[in-house]
Length: 375
Image 1 (tube, rainbow, N blue to C red):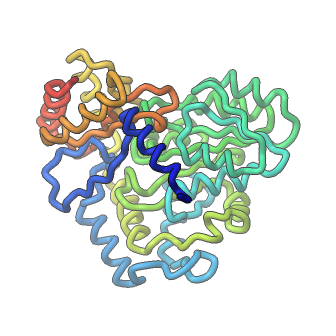
Image 2 (image 1 turned 45 degrees about the vertical axis):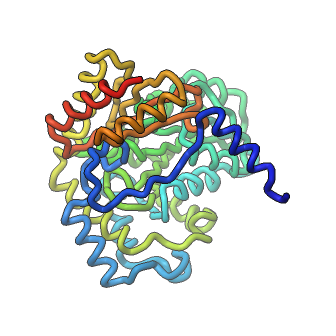
């Protein structure tokens, strides 16, 4: 049979305890959510849902085409201007997802003959961008500016350093200042994915590049998602205006993809404006993450100290991680479960995400459930 080989792969996944399944959730789920990425608790905020509804009523349910044909609305331009201003960059370009934004940034800025220096812990979207780019990729040790400097030192020609700002598995932050210094010594650009930093780090949640003093630099490009701290959907690339113009003309995930739905753009814009008014949400989310980590480690769990809002708790094995997450869910707490191949080091984890709207009582309840269900 044409796809008979799929059956053997399915059997291998079952033997390894790596089967993934979809679990549709209801609109009124009673679960305490420590699995999603709604860091600021905005996805159901009345201002954000009304922003989505107003945009849909005005512009329709979809953007109707690629952004170079019919898919760019005045709303998209408004979001791009305010996002760039908030994060401290000259210009921004909105995409249909953070994944598409990362593919665009890496492929368009790493032409034939260039070198891409990629952190070993990077997100799959950055990895796929490296695979699709025409440049040569060298993967270097995690969060190690010295390894970056060594890789760049042997190359002559265009080069970019690619890294997450906050890594999605363990929640640790990249040494952005060190990476920028290493890149500049060799006239290389720096592309950073701030999906897990926007809304959490920097003054009032302006992001990790802003916190590191790199926002607006002519050699720094940042990608963000609108689906985490901003509670919406989509992604964006921020950087110098010439870089953004280059993406408009060359990035395939921009040119050939339908534009971001107006409702998502409206929701993201409403969230951005709310964050400007309520910058304390960023600090609260980080405080919740710190509290979760302190309580978990006090109970004897092996957890990575969070630099933003992601807390990683080590599990004994992939199979037991799945069971642990399922038992937590049965007890009313939703947690993430990261297993190979999602984790580059092969270590399975529960992945918890802090939210600014979690109460102290909810934090205590979550820690109690995680401890009671520990395999």
